[in-house]
Image: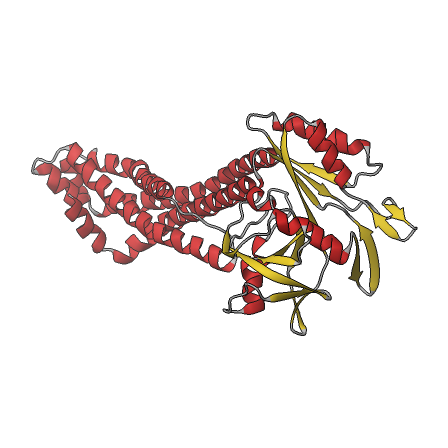
Length: 415
């Protein structure tokens, strides 16, 4: 029966291909949309897990103009302080540890040319908190911190841009007018905000320094040049990561931490982010995205199914004589129904297989040109093929039933 169906479809190749287009685009849309959605989910989950589901992140925020504190009237003072870090560690029982980072607006030099890189002053514990892997050399240690050693750990892209394919370990790196010795290079690790609302952290384009060495070389007050103007600011901590004990009520602890910090800050110069809440928000957004994209793909499949029904109705009219002859020689109604159903299922399944390839291609193009993570799973492929077969059965059932109800004498007389 399948051979008969393939033979019938091959007699009208162009019509069969045009009929399959709706299924091809529908299945392709399902595959591509599910791949984009799954990629966004994986990327967001990886990023949030990097931040730690038991962590609370406190970020310094520059308040509106005129609201920041000042020192001698010309230095802006705002953000989280080391005093805040000590109070949180001593007051909140659930806290297992805290790690501070400070963003330094320093120029990174490669000879006489500047390169784009983020310079971060932090503590040795940041490596484990951010799940950083060292590809070569080592991360700076407590001894480096205690002795304020001028050492640096480079992100993978920064190391490649500064030193090419040479071994950077032991080589000097110039930050503004100071030199730091490279002691380690991180393994590649891209991480993005992935629509979580959290600030992007590109580990591959970062340079990490011991906080004590950064303070000794550059101080706490930093100078930023923008559009010909110079702005001086004093920010002790840019980001403070607070790690809570397993099983802690993260939301309750985050609220308590926020109240502790707010007591010593007159202005709203900080924000508290809870990765667990961001994960839940991302999951809600993902569900909405999946529903919307699934609806769009479903409409394409519906249009494809209507196209199949239309063509099969025309086919039944064309093959009235064949139906009459088959019924006259003893074919049952069931045989006629199965004959046409097999044709519609073969048609929709072939369209589904082509659609899977189209969906893979669409997901690849999105990943390559839009630089978005896409993940096409076997589950999405199976679901798409199952839906395409179901469309063939549902929209082919009526034409098949109509053909089976023809009386042999009427079919032969009409033919």
